[in-house]
Length: 101
Image (cartoon, rainbow, N blue to C red):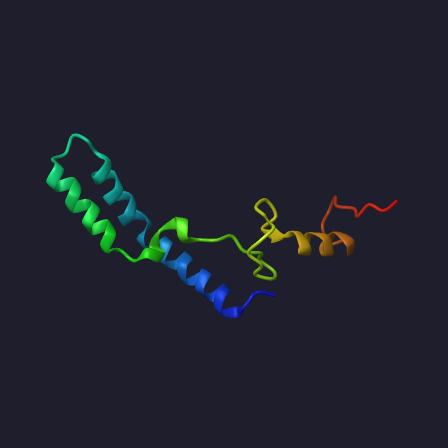
């Protein structure tokens, strides 16, 4: 089980990403637009830099929904490999059978 503080920090980051997503997209569009004057594009870059760092989507890290484990994460199932094995062994995942020979 991951530390509670790390799980909560990740939730806080997710809220910030959701809150600032539209604003960041608008500023990035202005900054990338080659038809606008250089001063306006530079001003957009400065405004983008003033936003909180944790509002960037690249700061997010995938975590297991059940344990909070950050490594060995299956995107499709949204759980870690350890929980996949455990749930598969218990027969709680449809279509998954633990093989033994």
